[in-house]
Image 1 (cartoon, rainbow, N blue to C red):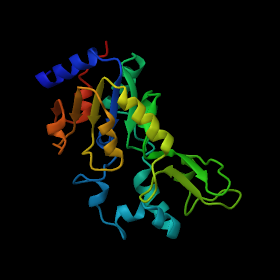
Image 2: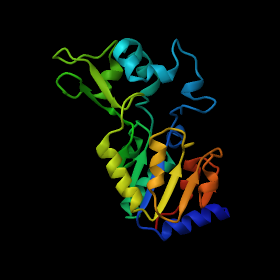
Image 3: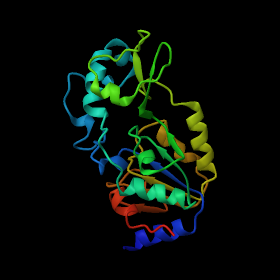
Length: 241
């Protein structure tokens, strides 16, 4: 264990209100592609750019094309939690981690056992009818074809925040409250390029900010501890005690 990870271990041992803020890099070790890396979704070729397909305007105008992309690239239902997800759940169970704030929509934190998770961009596991609000399972959406419809005739929409849509205010309020009261903030698996989500870290008022990302980020110089390794590789070495 190198000196940086030893420092992280010490800070975790000394903390009782840790908040973890994570992005796509937390799930890449579970086989879910991120958006901005060399192999990410933004660097693949489709009839439309992924940013356009994942916009509310596109969803309303071309729902069939949206769902073709969404089923193919966004529903990774066989993915399993990795070492990072599991360690965070252990830290919460041990009373050290207050909450996870995630930009991911895959539900892997909950699958690993985390209970207090603020999903900034929603979840593929929640879907509802836009007309009567009746829920629809993600398994039914994955197995279906075309645009999923409710028995009432309404269109089913995933409870994910598309481009042009606002973040959920209750989720933001909960995440901000936890950030303000945290005694250690660990940021992992994100380049902090997506706003307004990335701007939330400015609410952290503590003195220990850890940034763990596979590649350097523009925020590394602001961190009290920066570790340029995959998040699962780092957290996998942490002991919960």
